Image 1: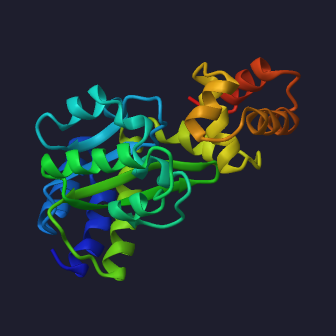
Image 2 (image 1 turned 135 degrees about the horizontal axis):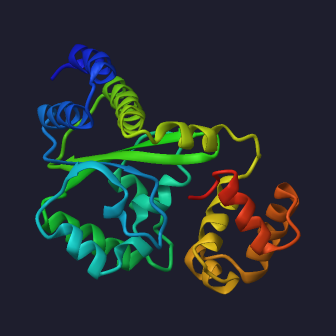
Image 3 (image 1 turned 90 degrees about the vertical axis):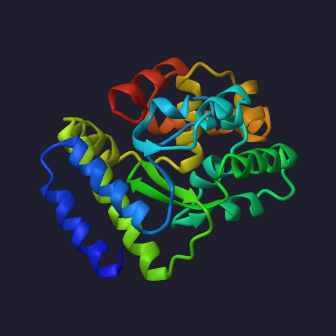
Length: 246
């Protein structure tokens, strides 16, 4: 598939009338570029099961089970880097960003394990909304070099497929409302809010994010002010009501 075909794909996806048609067109595009595996999914938090968030995808046999069994989601550098990235990136870029991280050896082990399963190289294309990262497209397998133009087009395809699938499933409006909500939370505040909504304590959040307990409390005070909440429990309740967390 060449660049012109990727542009045509944007039109084809928009004209799809069934979710399975969108998935098939995306699969063909990914495979045509030489990538064996892919996943289009809602934004993953570090304490979630990623496979429950997949809208479309195909991964190596036994890799999902290995990923969950070894709790790689807690240290996955691509997941952590995704929360900060403003642009598409290569998997290995995320590992390089955490060279001095306390979990560096576990990250390297995860990448080596992925390589052994056939995930030797790949790219991630973030899908952003006004409230932060909403999802991403991850593609990989053997090494494939994408030009800057191809990277940009794949990012557009990812966004188009993501929203078209949600639209056909009747879930787009709810997510759009959440992403358009005019509450100016930072990425770190949203991250902490999601962990709080999942029942984590300040101490647990501080360990996951490698920041101090005091810093977590400082962010929480800011969140309560912005949400006009009296306490943490009300902040979480308001976040659910406004669609900031689901």
